[in-house]
Image 1 (cartoon, one colour):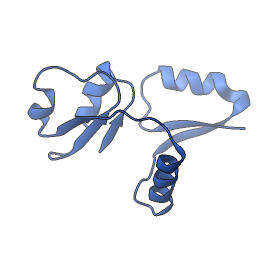
Image 2: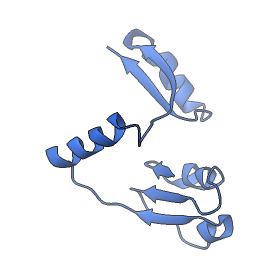
Image 3: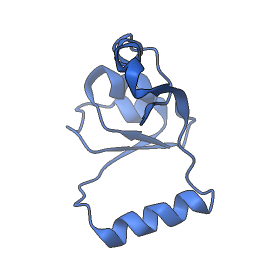
Image 4: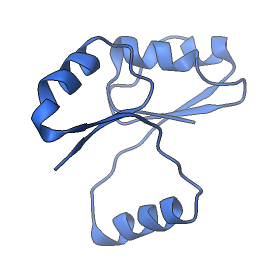
Length: 100
């Protein structure tokens, strides 16, 4: 499963990371064409409005180990320029976390 929050080329590259039968959920512009079908995956679009109930449900899934975010690298806040450079390089396979 991939959650796409960027779209564009990131969406297209992410399709290739999914196994056949996988699913991508996107919160940005939905792509045109047969891209998902060509990769043997499904694409769904999600619209959400944050609320306390939803956040509690997501927290429960993470705490139960059913959702595991991949953290690429963690930086202290003073290294924010380094973190931004890593992000801009486009080679990150996960999240970049800044600690305060």
